[in-house]
Each structure stands twice: as structure tokens, then as C-alpha cells.
Length: 480
Image 1 (cartoon, rainbow, N blue to C red):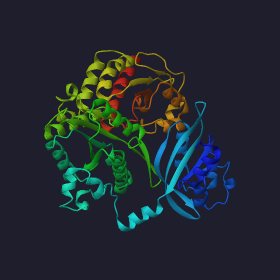
Image 2: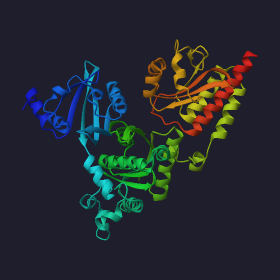
Image 3: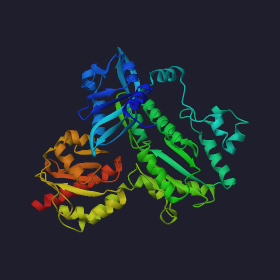
Image 4: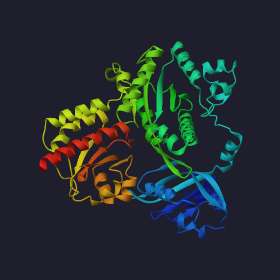
């Protein structure tokens, strides 16, 4: 049977999810029957040509607007929690949106959402937690098939996340080794989880943890199991992906395709950017010993943290076997500052100093490039090459002398001139610090990441702030 317009319309109108599509100005072009039923409309005429703000569905429409602007810029959103007003009642929804292309250009967006209000209310009222594995599903694995003859499912599962609890996931790994079953052992550490708890409350942290655990369990369904190591760390036992290339594909989809990580999660009117740092090693290719295998995934995890987090590392013996986790975990702020000062002392001139420390910062902090913005708002490379004419709106970002961002969304809205320059040069995440001493200001130092939506850490901020003071001192001396 061929797909024609009539058949397509029938499929859309029989879908239970609320589906809508908009033009490039975020105005409704069409909706399905489930959408009309949800809002109580007899016809789509009441909303065609209007946007969300004009319909008055959200007490705070700005986050929804920003989500759609990102989609119209080529991104996609997946399962974002939000709230909307329906017939005078606030309802909880989960929405996903994708851009619509024509001739290679974005001409609109299509989205869908479901109402989860009753589910959330039942969970809040009963204190119920999610359950990701049933007895039938776990009995497919010999270890759990035997175990569930002796203990109940509630004991096997983590109370909060509904995945395998710590003790049983480790025992499962040991059972695989005893049976000589090949598998890849992964660890996932959620980035800046403490900041989410401290800023938005522990329930927000629970929501994030439950979401990532749920999506990981769904992603690995049929070939792997997910367990909770403790706190914000999760473990994945992958029975399918053993070869290096397959492991890379597994992580790429986890970070980019399936939107398990590197995504925005809507919570209580706030956008929580959820990322994680991951590492893995494989039995028996990397090690045939349980303790050594776990030490290897620990090393890959810390290697990822040293690379700036929000990334994955696949164990390679020549690169990781001899790494010392204690050395990697130990704060290296002092040694980094000392190394930077030693390099800067050997050359004169701020740009020469930047050029001398760039290789060190690239290796230590995985910074892609450094740029200096002078008093005339001209942006230059460490070698003095001009890369912009005028980014006079950079000051719009500098409320506290330092600005960090894991994406360019905020930069685009507040400093469009700077945004265009950063985008042209392929920059994804930035740290900007004012270069000056006391009341004397010379310009700005820009640290660029061209690979990841990076979460800048406090120690990294401290190191770059220290470098900015060295540059300011050099510039003052150059004028004397």
C-alpha cells in the first residue's frame, strides 16, 4: 500500500499522542485530533497562525519559546518535561520536537506530547518509584533466574531508580566472569550532580537520576542491564558490544542519537542540562580479573573527567593501563598554575604568553583554542591573527568578570555579534574572563571548546582566572 496524503492524515489523526506542526515563525500550521481533544477545541481554526504565547497556555512561556528556537536552529528536543494550562488547570506534559527541512533549510518544526499529570500525581501520592525490570525480563539472565527463586524483585532493584541495586549488579558481573561470558563493563557519572541538588533541591536530583537510569535501561534492553553504583554513578553491563568500534558506536548513540545524555530536562520551570562522564573496559579482552577490570573502568572515568567531563573513554591498554587514579583525582590546580607561570616567565608579551601556554592547556584541560579580545573589541588568536572586526557586545555577558556557557544559546540572545564570531569558528562552549587589574581593564580572554557542550569546572575557572592576571600584569608592564 502506498502512502498518500489521505492515509497520512488518517494515521496522524488516530495517533494517541498530541501532534502539531509549526512554521519558521513558531506559528501553528496544523494539529491532530488528539491535540484538539486535549485542549477541548472543535476545530484547529482557533489556533492556526498563532504561537504559544498568543494562546496563553504557559504561565512562563519563555522556556518553551527558547526550546523551539533551538529546534528551528537545527537541534531536536526529546522528552522534555513541562507544564501547560488546560481549561483552567495546570497539566504536566512530556514533549519532543524536531526541525522540518525543505531544500536543506529549516522551514518549521513538528512536535508531539503526552499528558503525564495523573502518573506524576499517583507517584507523588503513593511515594511510588519507577521499576525498570520485571521478573520475566530478569529471568532471561541465568544469574537472576536463580536469584529470583530466593529473593523478591523489590530487594534486587534500587528503590529510587528501579534498576539493579549495587550488590546485585556486582554479583552479576562476577557471575559472568565465572561463566566466561564476554561483556563490556561501563560506568556513567552524572556531571555536576551536586550543583543540581544544591540549586534546585534533592527532588530535582532524583528526577534527573531516574530519567537517566530509565533511558539507559530502555537503550540497553535486550542486550544489557543497568545498575546503580551509588549516588550519581550508574553501571552498565553490555553483552553485545565487545569490539572497540562497536563500543564507540554504543557511546556515540548514547550521547548524541538517543539523547540519554547531553540533553535539557525540564523541571519545575527550570531547564536542567544533563550530561555525564563515562568509561568502559571489556572482559576478557582487557582483563580476566574482576578487580583489575573495575580499576580499568575507574581509570577511563577519571581520564574523561580530566578531559573536561561530558565525554566517554573506551579503555585502551597502551593509553590507560599505567594511569594512576589517585594522581588524576588529586587536585592539580597548584601544579597547573606553577606550569603556566613557568611558561609565561620565559616569554614577553601577552599574546606570546598565550601562545606558550596553549599546548599545555590543550593537553591538561582539553581546551581547543584561546583567543584574546583587546581594548578595541578585536578578537585575535595567540599568534596575533585577527579573527573578528568588532564584538562590542561581549560586555553584555560579563556581569561578574567571568562567563561560562556549555552552549551558545545564551550568547546568541545576549551578544549576537560575539555569537556569530564564535559560531563561524566552530566553537560550542566558552569560558570568558576579563583581563585586568584593579580598575584597569585591557580586554578579555576566551577559552573555546570545539568538541563538547562542556561543563566548566571550578578548578578550570581558577586556572584561567590566574592566567588572566598574568596577562594583565604583562600588559601593564608593556605600557610602562
